[in-house]
Length: 135
Image 1 (cartoon, rainbow, N blue to C red):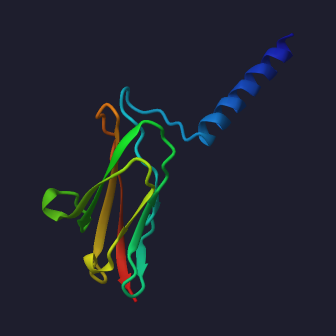
Image 2: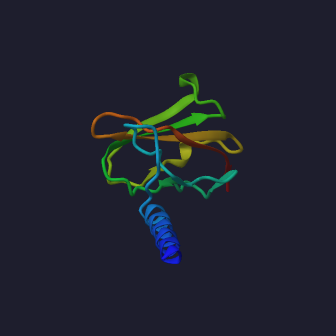
């Protein structure tokens, strides 16, 4: 009898950990949506070829998003004085293309993304810095 309870508990733990990871469910502060998970650029450099735009991508699997707040800053600091681009993005989107002429070669940029829920609650900010290399 004791062995069957252990098997049941192990099965439940495996089920819920698999379910939570497969459905992108994360635990956050009460009443706030989860922060967006960034996909690209998340490395040290982003290479731009010619006038091709730089595409920013993120996972978009959370139901209940009203919109995203997308920002690009020059340098590492995310102060208003370093902000060079800002746009609200509809909830169905998971990427945005930004024209190459916004970026200078060998310059560091930081992008951030905030999820805004239907009730106006904002997630924590997801962000990443990268260096632009133009070829």
